[in-house]
Length: 242
Image (tube, rainbow, N blue to C red; front, side, top):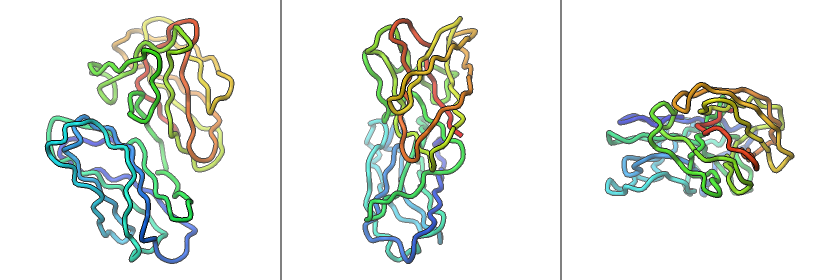
């Protein structure tokens, strides 16, 4: 879910199968990328429209991203229904993305993540960038204005996209957004499984290309590793899961 300048973004989660009211100590986990988090107010909207402020980040906080868990008393609210994470961008010049969020009830059960396609930037702060891979923030054609470069060429240089949520165990449609001039390979491993070789072609490192494939995801959080132990891989912009 994009966070654009001076705009309010809502990301929904629908809770079903719970009796009674929500708890007094609901845990709300958020993973938000943003280039100036001092622009942001973060809140939770209950199914009846009641707004609960989770954090008003100080205007002078110039750091990137918000990855944390809030505790909020929503015991006056019915648990079932559509809840929304609301992110209000108060300032101009910086943007971001709601990468993922969750609601965890005291029993430890977690509400399902937002339905529909999930888009995760390669450079998102919750991912693992290892061994000299680096974020190029000058990619004007990339969805978040950045891409990850120098993937592959050694076993130590890889990107793992973490917290790819699925409501059930299923064969998911995953689209890779990449940049490349010529032909190179990614090896893709889901949750530590044997790598699947994917050969990609592209016209330019300044043009985003896509490749869609099917990957087996488990119910809950998954990790998808992109690597090539012996040769360089394409630059990675993002993935979309549907």
